[in-house]
Amino acid sequence: MTENTLKPVHIIGAGLAGSEAAWQLVSAGVPVILHEMRPHRATDAHQTDRCAELVCSNSFRSDDAENNAVGLLHEEMRRAGSLILKSADASKLPAGGALAVDRDGFAERVTEALTAHPLVTFTRGEIEGLPPADWDSVIVATGPLTSPALAEAILSLTGEASLSFFDAIAPIVHKDSIDLDKAWFQSRYDKVGPEGDGADYINCPLDKPQYLAFIEALLVGEKTEFKEWEGTPYFEGCLPIEIMAARGANTLRFGPMKPIGLFDPREQRRPYAVVQLRQDNALGTLYNMVGFQTKLKYAEQVRVFRSIPGLENAEFARLGGLHRNTFINSPKLLDQALRLKQQPRLRFAGQITGVEGYVESAAIGLLAGRFAAAERRGQAITPPPLTTALGALIGHITGQADAKTFQPMNVNFGLFPEIDPPEGLTKALLREWKSGRKPRLSQRALGDLAGWLGV
Image (cartoon, rainbow, N blue to C red; front, top):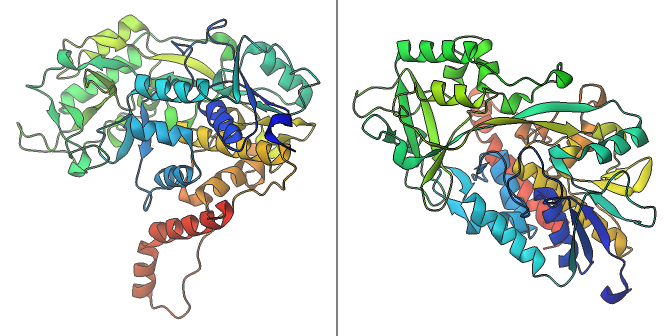
């Protein structure tokens, strides 16, 4: 079958997963019709109609491919020809050991690559309900903000109860409104990462009385509530700071406000607690409050966050907010090729499958695109080995996780099969051998990925 006679694959949603799926398909010579409801129907979090718009943090997290599972996932995706990683690398900002991007430049690069490709056809408008029956290959990549009509149709088809949780957005501050006589630049442990110099974060210190007063302000501050969604669980990796504060006075100090690895040059000591801000755009004019997802009402955010030393006169480019996040019970509903068991013409990708995080969402989009391309070309679909980050992630959501307790998951080395130690090691040698666990898993992963990619 020639490329000219291949039927198109329909992709619903032009977020990270849908954009990556589209790129993988057209890279394999398979035409794509990419459906995006924005700007005809807005969401609670998006501000533009661009592809792959980042609505929360601008960080893709650690870029360390040897010691961090998400960094390894970055590298695997690069080797698999990922548009998302290519665009992120071209838009990166200083962020210590993390891969952070200029969110506008990143989205523009993804959008330009797809709109310029001759095999991509864009169509704007909402898909209400299940896709038409003559769409024989569909990737549903609608993310955490799936339109109500489509969500209800999916739930009706699968018979599953809705699984959803609140996802909170962190505020963004104008850099020139930050008091650098009180705050200072430093990465944790002075770590140097991509495009960085070891001083990539602005740090606002709090002493013990200031910290305890801040915790009290969080607890009593007026918050946004959505009564129709009460009882919905939060994702543990993206908790609003008020929820963390309610768990105990020290929760934030051992979480996003931990002072470990930081040294206040004015006080000549480690602060009791710290608020870190990370560069959010290429110009360096905007900084986001790291880990400060919040459900405080807007006026309360301004009042409470201006109590932080260095942010007394903070001007906010964006305040925090909440949006609903929806996902399906993938271990029960999807096969190993991400197809819906009840209706295999429907394939799912991104956060709706129960992965959590930008990179994880794009990774499942990459796999969905590759699987759909192979299917369209009459080729065998072979999932990546479980020993790779890609394989561990898709393995988790399509069978390794317990369907009864399934919750969103970031990629981590706990999803990888372990490597058994050599026999006969003493306790000291075994301890030394275990210290190299992560680099060893990463090395095996990249070797096995090469075999899967056929390189």
